[in-house]
Length: 232
Image 1 (cartoon, one colour):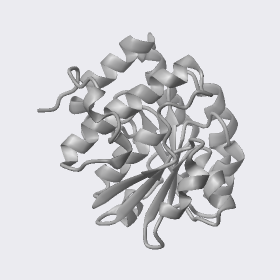
Image 2: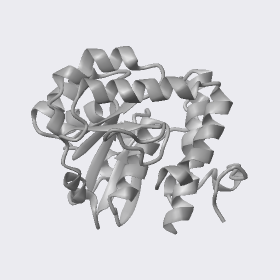
Image 3: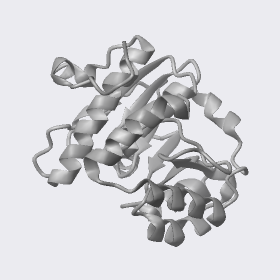
């Protein structure tokens, strides 16, 4: 995924939520100032190449679906999914987060040398200031949803979960599996429900790009509006 491909979709997301692009760009630049975005060795993402990668979402179904993770799967945990997996004895190879919940987990993983993909967006600049200075730069993979700049990368994706899927795709994952994804979770806010709808749309785009069918979309694939997406 390059930014030229992502930008038209990004513009649709901004318009849908009324988010100002300038705020995302300011957060991106703030993240660059708070750490050394060139300190992370991108070759570490090679652990995902050619592997079956499990993208674990933080939905309520996660505890019941953990047994779908095979012993040789590579696991990326999105946000608080990492804590659920940890309690179940499942190790993650990478975490994706915008720091809106479990900052302590971010610090714990980074202190153990586990890479954490920290995402900057328009309304998490305070969270970046609170957490990023405490994370060793060599274990922090800095990302943005705006244009990449100064070592801050954009691999596609909007929520912690679908960003993990796009990251795995970028790194050359052979297959993607999904656990803990609940697009219709009644407990979430209306805004979160819209974000989950976008996550489903973006996964539909990704599976088309990969020539793969994600089982997590099996009950909703045909209902997803892909008119605005650059897919054939």
